[in-house]
Image (cartoon, rainbow, N blue to C red):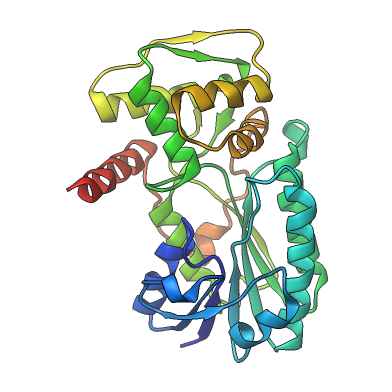
Length: 299
């Protein structure tokens, strides 16, 4: 059993990881800027990556610290995320943490120029790795699950549009992964000597284009395919405004995510399967789970 700190404990990944770590027998502390509002299963403590002094209490005595801090809804997200990572790395070193686990973004420069979003994820990886605490990095593409921004974009587009007008990035290949499988990998690397100091690529069972993902989601959600019309030019900025018309996804967040969709993000190194062995779910199964979670919450 390890003592584990989860930052971003109320976020999309963190709120699912905390109970999974508890089920695995770990002693878990949930870090949040609003501990009085936390209703999860672990003990909540205050911590803010923008305030070095506030990190001492949450990190004190921790063996493993999960770092889930991003600022995609801010135009200056790259600078803010870099500063936060430096602060956290120094605090983790000062308190004797043995392993930091970071969930980054999948993408290979060999397949095209990385977007600002993906470059920022790489920078955070490097900043954390430059510290004295060994880091385990899991790189993922789109994570499918209720409450995730990428899934909300997909769900609302499929729900609200009779015909999908998409730019050329809809033909880019990606390897989506379900939130349940992401959590399984995250739990599996905690304190795992075979994972410490290493970077892994994680993905689901299918490699699909974004257009194929929309089609499969439409089949699961409505039992029909979604007519798709491809257009030659639709910039990330225009795409984000288009998203704003048909979804409630924040325009800045949407633009930063869309900017990454021109880069192919496919697993090329599956060594994680040797460290945390299991069979990840198909994309259709991940969509079914997300849809069922949406239905359960609506009851």
